[in-house]
Length: 68
Image 1 (cartoon, rainbow, N blue to C red):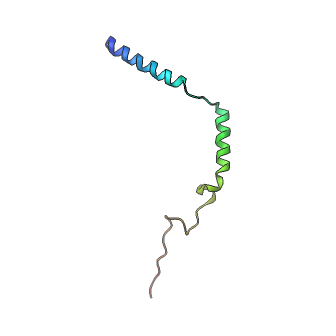
Image 2: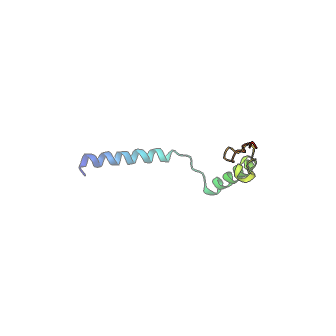
């Protein structure tokens, strides 16, 4: 690496570090508690937990009337 490309790379690193230092950090325990609370509040809207009725399920095979 040439000296000028090394300086450019270091400036990019410093710029990235300056951006990261401004981020608001949350403790993992608080983030986990918030996530758990969100999941519990929205559990009734989750089709993986409540299921999907066959009438509103677009992936359920459609019944086709047959003629005799």
